[in-house]
Each structure stands twice: as C-alpha cells, then as structure tokens.
Length: 205
Image (tube, rainbow, N blue to C red; front, side, top):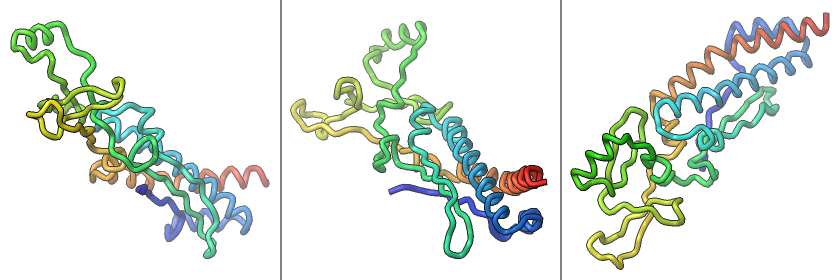
C-alpha cells in the first residue's frame, strides 16, 4: 500500500489564462513541465517537513518517496503522482525502533546514568525535540539491525518480536505536515505554469 498526493492543472483561472497564450501542442508541453516541477518541489518539501518533525535520516525519507511524472489522461488532463510508502523498502512496513535509538550521550549524562544504575537501558527519540523513551526489556538483535522484546518479559525463553513504530507514510499523514505540503503545491503550481509558458514563448519567438 502507498499513500499518494496528486498534482494537477485544472480549474485555476490564472493558470488557464497563461496557457491560453499557447497553441494546443505547446500548451500540453507547458502543463507537463509545470506540473512535474511542482511535483518535484512537493517531494522535497515532504522530505524537509518529515525530518523537521521526526528523528529520521534524510536517506530513509527520500527512499520512501517516489515521483511519477505527469502522463496524459483520456480527458486531456495531466497528473503527477507523489507516492509516500510505509518504509524505505517500499513494502508498507513500519520502521523498527532501531532507527530512533539514542546514539550520542554526553559524559555527564553517562555518569548520571551509571550512578542511577540505568546505563544499560536503551533509549529512543521518535520526534525531534521529543522526550527520550525507554521500553522495559528492549534489546538489540539481528546483528545490530533490529530492536526486540520478549512476548513474555518474565520468561527468558519466551519468543521475541520486533518493536515497530510509526512509518514514513504515517508521518506524512499528520495534519501539520500534509497541510504544509499541500499549501506549497497550491502556491507553486501557478508560478511554474507561468514560468513554463514564458520559456516556451521565448523559444518559439
């Protein structure tokens, strides 16, 4: 499964007025160029917005987003798709907690934890600026790639399960991030249409 947003040219008076300056074939070229540029900016904005809110690295966000350039539809419209997948492997899975594991600790904090006897606890930070989270019984396995817990924490032979958390798709689905991206699309689209029209007119002058 993937979540997608759609960028398309339709129903905007300013856009229609700009495109009216071109003949049919040139109009299609301008629309395709504008819509694809807008979709590229939307993809970049998704990456920035997610990384500003969540403690996830840029490569993982980038790999979870796919851009499909505009293609013609039977009704003559052009649509570009930005797909946001559930994980960087594009299989719809949530991210394991290993991606949010605390990796840097100050010397003073290490001493404080050692005095309190909590230095062995794993700590995680999912949201930028959010609190560190501890999960009783969590441990690292799978050659350092996965955080697990035992299904029955009181039984050392109990089966284990991976600890999965929010994925890239769910991050984008937050109202704050989604609204930010859609607002940018609405602002960029008319500008890109006008820019494409000017370039095509200059080339064909």
